[in-house]
Amino acid sequence: MRYYKQIGIFCFIFFGLFVNLYGFQVVAKDSIDKKITPKGAMIRSLILPGWGQLYVKKPVKSLLFFSLEAYHGYMAYKLTDEYHYVDETIEMMGDYTWSTLDLGNQRQTIIDSTGFDIGTNARNLKRMRNKYYWWCLGFYLIGMLDSYVDAHLISFPNKNIELSAIIDRREFGINLSCKLGR
Image (cartoon, rainbow, N blue to C red; front, side, top):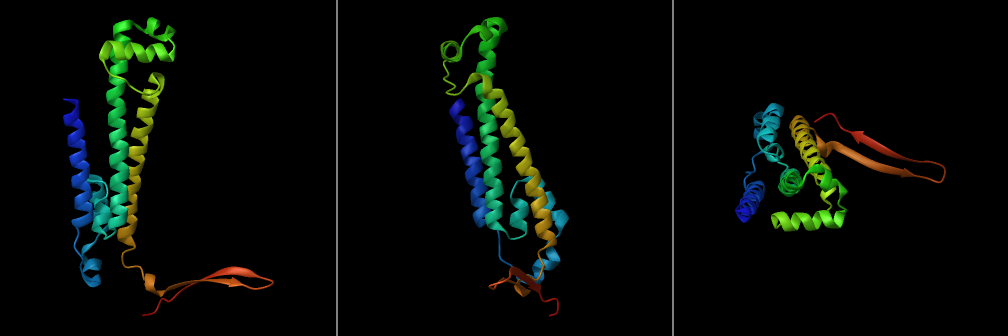
């Protein structure tokens, strides 16, 4: 039963990557300005991480946000599953007996009672799981914000920007210029 969950997660990730790589179409610049809205980009990122970036024609960012979300979601799911084995063992033994065991004996007790080797520190599973959930939420919110900002900046004149360095014997600096006229 456990392998079906992993196969399902793998298929979901693979499908998401396939959609992110091949699920967008190239349209003319004029039609992009009329179609893309910041609200639409943010709602798409709300529904599926990376979809908002794909909507504003940023496939690399889309793949990055989807991959980050998928990885951290998978790790949180995996650690939740492992934590259930630890929790099951603690309920079977009792809190006091569990707390008197050292790490090696705790790991061996989990193997003996559930048949599952957690492979990591049993005491840190809950903390690690929570950390991955927080990272997952953070990437989710940053992805929504990024797609919203990218949709606002879709018509920004990036070809009229010039960045140059000034290096002289007595002075140095950076020159940034932007042509506002057409």
